Image (cartoon, rainbow, N blue to C red; front, side, top):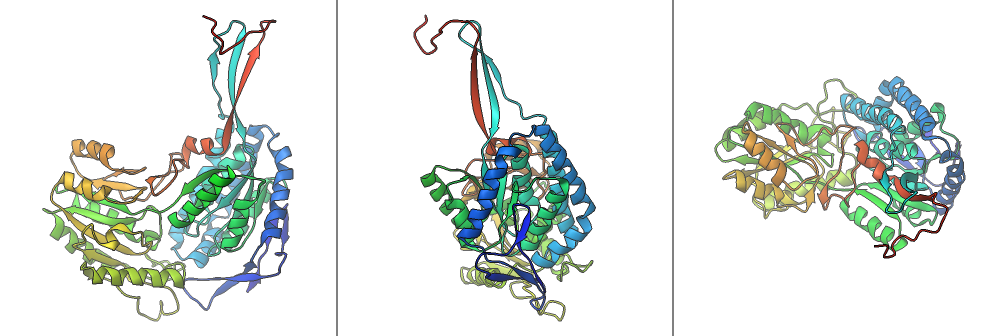
Length: 493
């Protein structure tokens, strides 16, 4: 077992208290990956001081030069992909073919962010005065506190960290305590790429560590991915402290399957959307809303495919579905399964802990399908974040849309149909930040906006060109070369 450290001002450091926590392989509780610092206020303050000092130099570096460093980081992520994928799988559970995809998103984001450093465009506009120019520029914000979840230990942080660096900001990052080793490798990669000391810092810890980052007066922005409950608390504090905040929170994503859909294609999409990453994605397919005409055949085929899924440790090549992240989440998911039964949903398959010698030491739950789920049931409305799919019957297209929108979240959505008119109608009518046509609810691409509405977010979009709106502020400049006093906003007419 290894003892890992924080990364502060280009150095690997213990926590001031010397306290630690363990990182445990969710597929095998006997495998302790290592201990990590349980950081406190003093550790956070040290990292923020380093980031504040480094900001003066980093923000003054020409943006394309920062982009050169990010491009090199992309090359290193690519070189270390296989190694890092196995580390990620060991500490958070999903199969290696998925963790490789996680890293590919970071590679894509690094290259995309590097390119955008030559496109941090402002606007010019005509002045209402003669001999005067009006300009605007994107400016960096300062020290950014980044707090992320465990399920995408490299991809999701990269969506925030790499664009923030491209814009000239500095970073203090608290990764999840469930996937901390990946964060240390992230730091190694940025250091090798040439990111100067203090620009990027990693502080490990539990919830109080994140709170210390939020509360510190020198942190100007918080970028958060996690639960809606925690995100709302962060937003409340950032509002009181007048800090900019970007939130990516929960989801309860629905796929609509119409009676003209390619049923076999829809089933493949639902299987991947519901049970990829063991259902532990904010974009996971949690609800299938199926037209009454194809409801029975859909359930029959889906059940057969679900039963055939291979559970196991993600490091095994044959594994399709890995463990859930920890015992707390394991108990929560099993609790929701019991709630579903109690409230009258029909359990079609799964619904219990997985059995067998190859899964006995891990947090394995059978992929679970409930049928006849109505919109007054908790499993229809509440985020479970596990391998549980609720299937509901729709009488018509309009009924399906009504069911899909009957939810406090609004992240991702999908419809399977061969009717182009219905497809475009759904794009307009579904209340979500993302809609897929004839594809599952998962599969975001790095160069497109990512985010949701309602209880999922606070209006910002990560990914693509929109993420640069989060990590920059606008400066407006007026240049008067008339040689005399000209008074704008006075009645000159």
